[in-house]
Length: 148
Image 1 (spheres, rainbow, N blue to C red):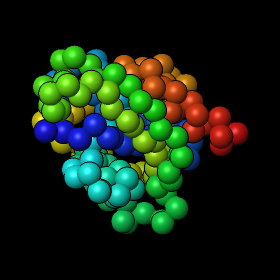
Image 2 (image 1 turned 45 degrees about the horizontal axis):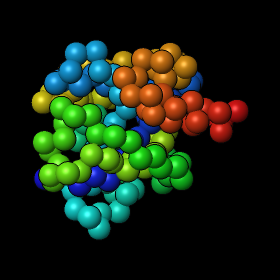
Image 3 (image 1 turned 120 degrees about the horizontal axis):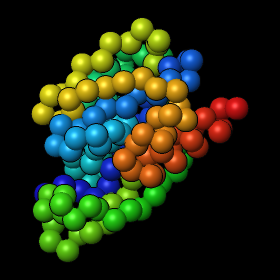
Image 4 (image 1 turned 180 degrees about the vertical axis):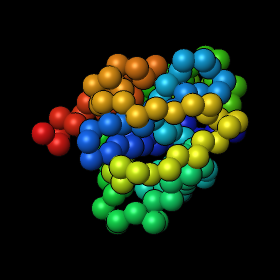
């Protein structure tokens, strides 16, 4: 069963482009890197690093130490009904913690084909609009409003 605590990682380049990845199980569901904790005591930053590696092939350990930033923001949202079977009976809400990851402009992306089928780099406002999850779009806008 999945733990209803997750991370969302907004990956961006110095030019303001944001990485979005398309889910394999839902056409046109574009998102940032997301994923649940593997165990209840898992460190959130380590979970973010693990999810980024699994979903994009980016090894955060190879980047400068300040590349991954905790945005010190969390939200609680209702889990989509079609995905509730992954959780313990009666679990309907998830707590998501937001992170950002600045990457080199020439970074290579290697998707996990069972999870995602495509990726694209978009200007941050366009990326925020394209996300299927409103909170994912909010995380992108929050990141760039703090950078201006």
